[in-house]
Length: 138
Image (cartoon, one colour):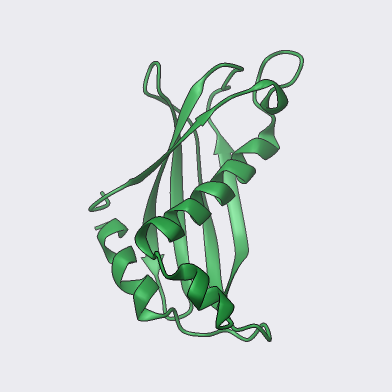
């Protein structure tokens, strides 16, 4: 279990669901990406300065497993934690929880790599590495 989870709420709206009322599969990836950005700004307020100095964060690999449908009007909570931290990469894990019944409707992960503005791999800066540790799965 992670020491701590980062929670990001999403309300499923008209543009998120198909005519049957179920969530489009691509929305899970979009929400995960947005949650990652909010997560970074939450624990690293100086992230924008790091970006301006040349740091880049690229999604190297990602996966979402759909367990049960979500529907228009659902409130979904993305619960994120860190699965693994390496020298130049972080594996982020996420559970998509429907708030009304606390059912996990999807789960996923993404491997994020850190690069410089030329695209070369670069070590994770301490300003990012240190705060990530409290979200690391034990």
